[in-house]
Amino acid sequence: MMESQDYYLTLIQQGHTPVDAAHYTCQYYPEFKPPTAGAEMIATPFGSSEFVGLSGQGGAVSATGAGSITAGTVAAGAATGGGMSVATIAVVSVLVLGGAGTAGYFIYDYLTEPDFYGTIYWQEFGAGYQFEEDTVYLVFPAIEDNCDYFETAFSETNTQKRGELCYIDSPFGDFYSIEERDDYFLISFSDEKDTKDRIMVYPLERGAVMTVPMSDGCDVWVSDIEAPMFSYATLEGFGEMEDWRDEFEDIAEEIKEDGPSKCDYSYDDEDSYSDSPSSYEFDFSDASDWVSNATDDDLIHVQMTKGDDVNWAALGVSIILDGGDTIACEDGKLVGGELCTFTSDDDGTWSLGERITISENDVDLCDGSTGGCQIDVILTNIRDDVQLAYIYAYAE
Image (tube, rainbow, N blue to C red; front, top):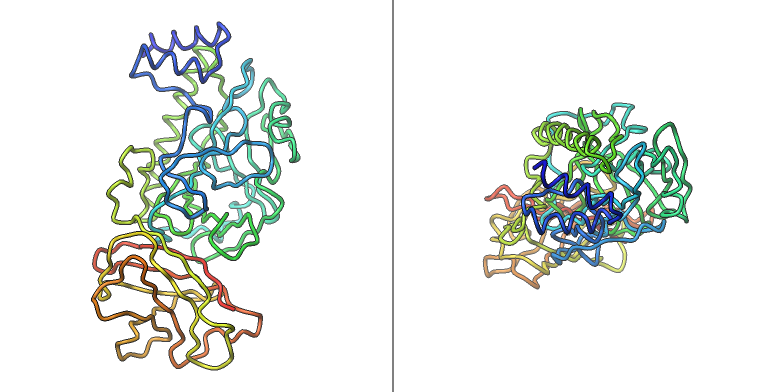
């Protein structure tokens, strides 16, 4: 491996960009693993035109200030530390995570820990996030002891230098809200009432796990690690970078053990989602003109737009109203005492193009007194113990 590293560093010293240097090195040394990559080199194995889509296409967003945290990958600054003479673009691996949603349950519950706010959560390629109650910062090590690169790359935002780190304030737009749920934080970058531009962050002892609504793909962030103050423009810095990433991966494996049991961390595998049973998409719509203070209101329509048939007997439907407790719904054809029901047909399965309607069952769950209700819909395949989707909907 040292031979390929030497070749790569020689190209850097000759003035080639890191992207070109890595490309040429891989041609001669197929086993060479680039230390990091620019947007030109890395595309996520799946992406979407919408935040919750499953188009399977990678993508990148230019780091010019406002942009979506979930639009594939974010080209944003340099994954380098003090003393680096070449400013190279890094990739912030915030993913559009396609597939089935999973909120999951954790062994630990750290939401009461005060250090979620103000903690830097690092990603594998040397970029970090720091969440506050009123904003989020994108964090990078300074380049040559300044933040000039990031002030240019994020010209529409406020960039600050704090010690040896550069903090980019609100890099994904002006809107930001954070809401504490049972075992995660729901973070929104849009005031829309659907799933677009939302992430779910589950804090753990040495880091966090991030996913998005209607996704079982998960990304691991590490907090219990030193800032990645390395430079790969020298052989010494290259080694420091590899040591840092080795430590990152070791901690990430520990975090995965405490993370959601149904999380899929294999988003970088070529065939991760090709045959996944969790490849489902659903649309939702309001089921009535308005909700009332009477009982038995229809609340939400949910239509399957992608995926295999699900046997009605295997379908589990639950809802959460306005951040409250989880309520299990039952098939409307059955006789029971659940607080909500969902419709089914007589052919035995929920198929592509068909929709269900979720309704109140002899109770008034959403009275419309505040204009409507936020309704989280959790769809599961009970037999396979697989969560199909986690949908954020709104009934008015």
